[in-house]
Image (cartoon, rainbow, N blue to C red):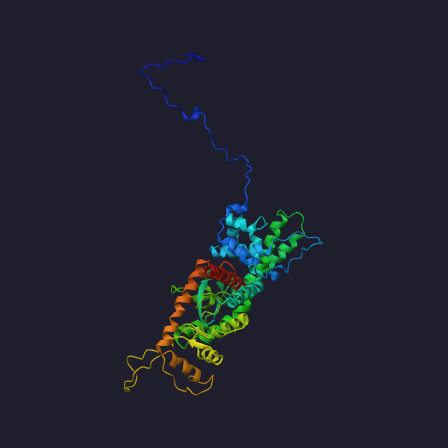
Length: 464
């Protein structure tokens, strides 16, 4: 066969040499070349993704309260604002995924398809997201009430029994940030002088920093000054609370002699006993959950280390939200004070809580006495016919003690652990392992977001 070119004949007994990488002709990656990739955000997300459910959920709600503070309106000058519905949806999706930091959420809004779909091109940044979370506490509270009212009208929330429990969450403050009055006053003087110095440099045109950097430094200095002023204001309250709970022993006397301390980072945080037995700065976060639906019907954030006295305010919050009160309430003996049991019973609410265990009898009595059998925790104490505030049990407390001796009451109380502990675990999965905001008001805003996200997921699971 004739060929166009003469091919060299292969020499017998000799194999060709292997090709070296530097002389091989290849398609090599070029990653700095711009590409136009036509794609639609809606096609990147599955139809059953939770982001779609969150957006559909928000479109059915009245969110007019979130738009009230926007000053850019039609027919008037001003830069358009980012849609609050988008910001709220982003925080709800982040809460469901356990994301609690604004910078991390900002990265997800530019990298993750679900967050990019929910954002839909709306401009966001970490500062805008952080401000939105803590500046709409009233609107978040009203939104939670709106959701609960809709679920109750649909028969999903019954309020037959409500379980209340508290969880202590580490604050955004270190143990080493606590200082006494003298040190705080010295730090406050330094902070005030720093604010004054930055204010003088603002009028100086030769400042090497940009306007953005200078504004950030001024904001940080003002916030530090405000935290120190608030810390000094909280010192008398801490000292008073310490004297009230101090007991008459050598350890308490030594504690009373020491001057009270408060955190410079978060003046409202208090050192609490944590579940692992250690003591760290924390907040006490309260949840009230409907037993039948496991829907959160009440939340509260406090810096009180004990749960005593928190049951009645929670019931009043539920009544305000839903215009109805629970038939029964379940909590552990940390909530079971005589005053709260009396008040709740007089409201017509049945209390299910284990009575506190009796104190141990001394092994070696000072004077020889006849042996007596220890009282059961459910037995009424002396003075049962006396009024509230007097020594002894009120008739309502006697009724509660008798009720908790029955098997029916014990069976009902077992529902508390299956409800409250599960909700606490879900809240920790949503990021409540350590707080990233400071102050009770901002902590409550974060807690409301967790409750709304939890109720949204419960609504979806019960209706699909």
